[in-house]
Every structure is written in C-alpha cells, then in structure tokens.
Length: 173
Image (cartoon, rainbow, N blue to C red; front, top):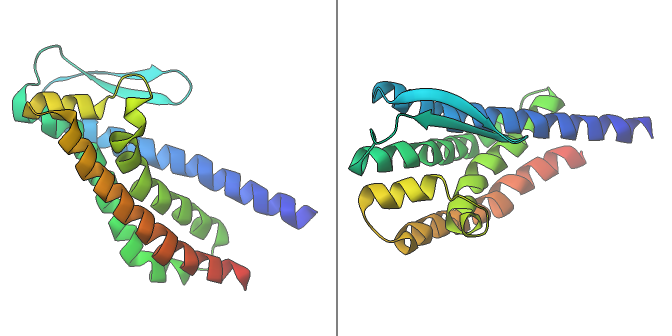
C-alpha cells in the first residue's frame, strides 16, 4: 500500500512538473519573440491553468503574427523529438522520479500542441495560436489543421510504438 502511494505521488509530481515545464517552454517561446519584436505588453493568467503573453494591439501583422503564434508549438514539438532521440540515455539514469517526469514531458511535447491545433481548438474557445497562424498567413484553417493533424498522427505512432514501450520495459523490471 505504501509503495503504491509513493508511486502515485511520483506520477502526480511528474504531471505537475510537466505542466510547469510545458508552460515555461511554450509561453517562454512567445515571450522571447514578443521581446524580440518589441511588442511585449504583459503576462496574463487566465483561469487556473492558463498563461498568455499579451502583445501590444495591432503591432503583430502578417508573417510576424504567424511566426509569433506558431513558434511555441514548433519549439515544443522539436523538443519532443529531441527527447525521443534521447530516450535511451534518459532510461539509463538512476532517478526514477526524473525518468517518470521525462516520460510525461515527452508525451506532452509530442502530442499536446499538434492535437490541440488540429482538433481540440475547434471545440475549446479561442483557438489561440491557430488564429494567429491563419490570420498572419492569410490562409484558411484547414491546411494548418491538416499539417498539425499529420504531425499528431506521426507523434502518436512514435509515442505509442517507440517511446512508451521503452519506458514500460524499464518499469516492469
């Protein structure tokens, strides 16, 4: 019973760490670009889980808006791919709590943005990044959703067939 409680604590801690790391990286990419473009206004907390980088009104247009809106998803997905490549090295580490965190972080970075942009943003208010991408590029949503949908399918395959089995094998020992 105590071992199970300890295991659950490690999982929930890893999930909490994943949320923090995701927001730091995802919103941090927006922040860095807003600072580079000199359009940063403030950081806004939206509800319990939302963080947004607010830019000055009307300052981001065209490709700059598309890049600002899309860069955070590109960065998280690329970090997800890096973590995929580093999975064998991560699994050699001795700290189980760190390994569990890396499992959830890898899943989050590979899956969250592609699934959100391709599907979930249609059902969840706002749309956020996809709105900026399509407005900045002046194109319909469908091609962007399709690109991110293909990325999501690839990443689901990578995670379920390549990454997760490696972690499962380690934790079954």
